[in-house]
Image: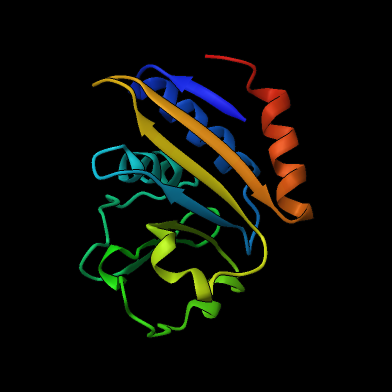
Length: 153
């Protein structure tokens, strides 16, 4: 699925639609260059999950967890490049919350077999192209449902 998102409001709507469908053990990978909007998407997603705290990038802590309608685990693995250290990722991937991972390519060997990948590409200051792909039966069904709901912005 490919979308062109032309404003923060549209990104908020897309993140909220995904958050509405999130269930425990879901893992979402966020890919994109620096400044593409990964953390902004994460903030909108967490807010839609009912997180009341301010969501900031966990660049230096790697993982931050928040309380919402279910636990929200936000990872930023940028600093783990060339690291083979397992920080207990399975506890998050197979726990009772949803996990969103920025820079997942840094921990590919630790990722679960199924996940949804959201790639954000900057088109202009306000516009982004968002590509969503799925790996695994559950995520393919999720992608189909999202595709049915999101025709265009």
